[in-house]
Image 1 (cartoon, one colour):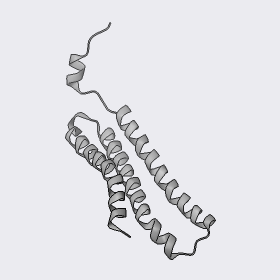
Image 2 (image 1 turned 120 degrees about the horizontal axis):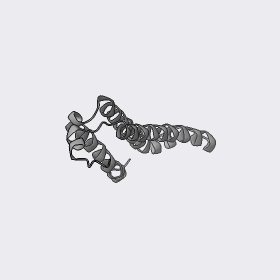
Image 3 (image 1 turned 30 degrees about the vertical axis):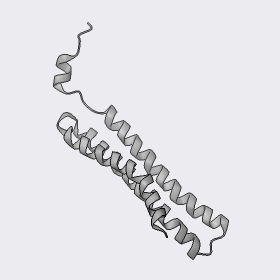
Image 4 (image 1 turned 135 degrees about the vertical axis):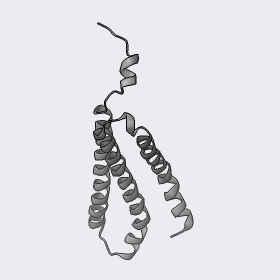
Length: 120
């Protein structure tokens, strides 16, 4: 495995990981303004997305070695690849769903309620 191959994998996955780490930091900074449920769902959603991204990166690193060392038929290799990609896709879907739930379940801060116009 060449360094350029590893660099290309890192270059493809690091931006998303950086955004997810920033999400953890932002939720931590805004924790006092969010409900416990929103914070928990946000952290779980980001955690699921990080796990999916790491799984995808590890699969990309392991793919050439697995292909070279094992005597897979094309159909069995396709099944293994499908399984790994399906798990990563499910983790991503769960992570995005939890982030959406965190947004929907957040409570309004008292300062926002004071500045809201009264339409009655």
